Picture 1 (tube, rainbow, N blue to C red):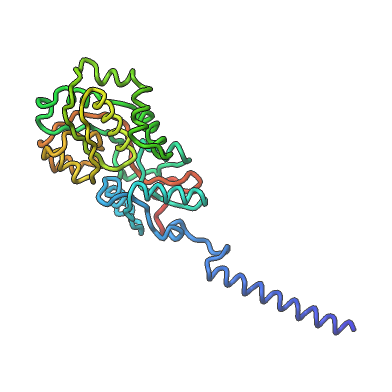
Picture 2 (picture 1 turned 60 degrees about the vertical axis):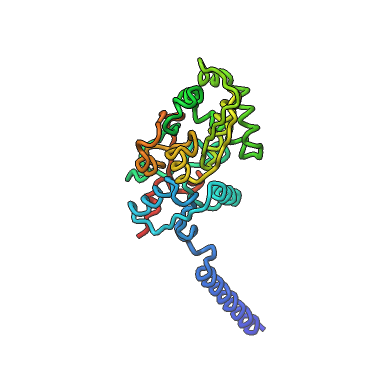
Length: 300
């Protein structure tokens, strides 16, 4: 009796051990819990970017080269990038995006820039207002308002957050202007109103530039201008203001992001200087990711 029970126990133990061993092997081979994947492997070595040709995308591609990374910068759009970021955070998954601020995502999520010791993304940037040549003579009042236009990153983020929450940009701009008449008064000080003069502002469809262009468009409208806002891509935006097809832009990220366009058309536009200072671009990750520098993406 004892021998029979012992043999039965021994056979069961061997079977259980074999199954456990097989399970562990399959877990490792199939990427289970025992398989430790690098950040690059989890991300399929992809950095989620915005529209192709954007300065932050070019800088990200430069960073890939400077740091010798085995990554591809996948271009998409600003909206697609923020949606991918939102989805990853909802599932607490890793993601690397091309980021910039001011931007509503920094208020909505706990994010961090990866340190950039090689300086691939350059220093902090300004956002400048650019007018077509001759605007100061043709529309001196609008020119003066555009030249006076200056606000803080927190102002821009107030507008961006509400737009991201589903409100119409022109409605949010109207509310911001109504609630910040002290700042608007500085922009319009000493400027006479006009009667239906047409003016066209071009902008690229970034959250930041949707905010600034709608706000300054609202101010110009209040001063009597018939304002048209035209959404274009980066290259056409600069070509339009340089050729005089549009009157002005308030969306020039300098010196890095739009530096190539600035150099290409220099002398064919009027640079009115910054309307916002201290903007920044770089690679951005959720704060829960255990990396702090672009160098942490380097693999042997």
